Length: 202
Image (cartoon, rainbow, N blue to C red):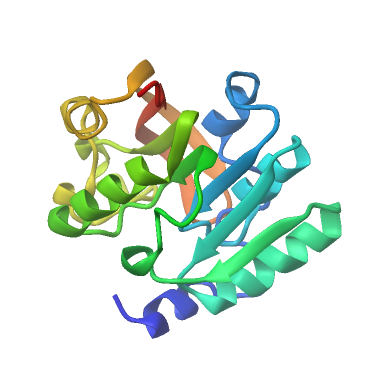
């Protein structure tokens, strides 16, 4: 998708997904690293990266849309969080530049399967030995609900997909569930969710 699409998505003065972190992320914060470096990819308006920074992590975050980053930087300033924000295309990010103790990929389901596989491989390269991966997204059952998420079923996640993609990691949690989300205008209503929590042990 083109930059104009993403900038248009975030052009409104309000926060599309609100300013609170994704609820499932907040619910497992005690299971994530307490210190170290974190990468929040396709971070949007900053709600998740700011949350991680406020909990002691040194956070790098990137997004394609400069309009989103303007609001992310403002949110970080408003709450006193230190986040290093970058404007970048997820398919061009240098995953091997620096290892991260936590990589968080939250609701970034805009990639077709071939590019998603490329990004998933990059994510594996970005995790430091002993580091943690957290992924949160939508399952195929989300299609047609009109409450958020990708419009194409091939962009959704299944447990088999995540297990196959990250099978080299030690998976602590892989679950599917339904939950009512209330996260701004972007995520609002009954949602078919899936999450992965895993550690790189080798």
